Length: 109
Image 1 (cartoon, rainbow, N blue to C red):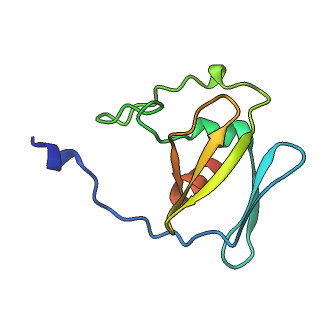
Image 2 (spheres, rainbow, N blue to C red; image 1 turned 30 degrees about the horizontal axis):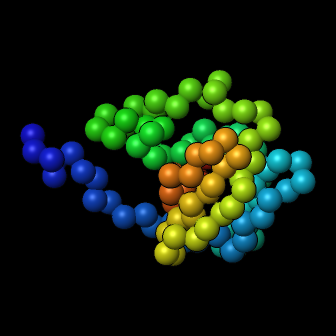
């Protein structure tokens, strides 16, 4: 099996959210197209980080131990990346994950 056989070229079909807000009680509020609103605890969003530091690239196995995420984790900055994701700089110093709209939907459950 070659390298390209392991790469998933499927594109995300999720539309971007209409709103992303931080709530006072430590949650990310996402309003999807059509007005469906969900709130996701910051710790849960951080736990879904898809970066190579948090997920083994070739197997897809999660390497981030949720117990290592501080209970008081919070975003320090949220930066749009194209029309497909946001990059979140976290209070624990982590900032390499790109949260696609599909990733945020998965984090929301």
